[in-house]
Length: 377
Image (cartoon, rainbow, N blue to C red; front, top):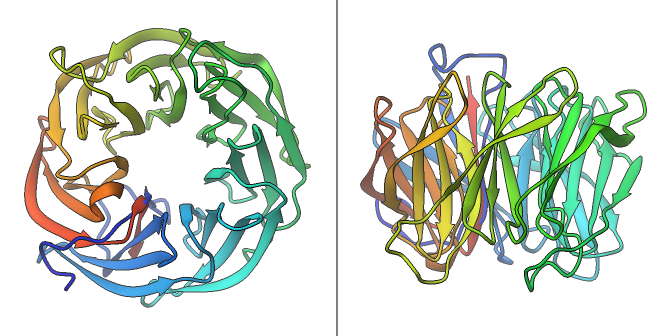
């Protein structure tokens, strides 16, 4: 059953607010959650009933094994997914049925190496950015007017290493475009750098920006990157050190200025834990990040004038290895995917304090690692 408590594995959760709507104006007719997995069961398509607080399964797309991360086109018509299972990694495009949210395959591009671990889409829908930690590259794929993926127009090879035993070589873990799409930020877990690239919008080529990277403390292991809705601040979740780094953003040059580095774990916790995902609430007031090991979301309040963050608290994710989560675009909930307990867990969010309350509502998904929210109007 898919109502209330269940137990599937989900890998990845993402949010889409399309058509330029603000959270105050959103009134969707239907809400869809796309859940990527480390499973041959494929990519799950779930419906979320906000009034009843329930999940139901609509579709499983099993044409590619282990579809581990996905991203939505800004026009709301297409979804893109990466898979690193099998001999080759693949990047696939799907059309979204505007009536029920179901997916139909369009085309794919293959990479001759495995290790694809993240995909993001240019805010104007022109390019898809793929991080391949396995070989230390980031690739740029053009997107046609019909949602198809073209062959890669650029592949950037990272170099370097750092001090941790998992930092023997480069490992770009994600790519986050700036709000205007002119820059791309790439946290590299292997080199302790957040690379900054300038995009040539005509060709899709990435070149080092005026400030080519920001260097983090040795052993940090930057993984994912979140930009404040105003675009003036940004935050890196650092997997190996379980820290968050805060930055001021120069929106003209893309440069980052380090503001703060703060621990993600309680002071009395000394067991193994590595961090994973990071997101800013839609109103820009709170920052959330996940701990795998402590199995929690850490909650910070953001100082709107300085960008610095202050601890609010921790909330258990009610499952092991919370690899990904999504803050509801309407601000009311947080959806967490716990890989090791095969569940998607629903939390109610207090929009004044940022604190989370476990609702008891879960969905079962096989090894989930990414979740994406989509609205049908």
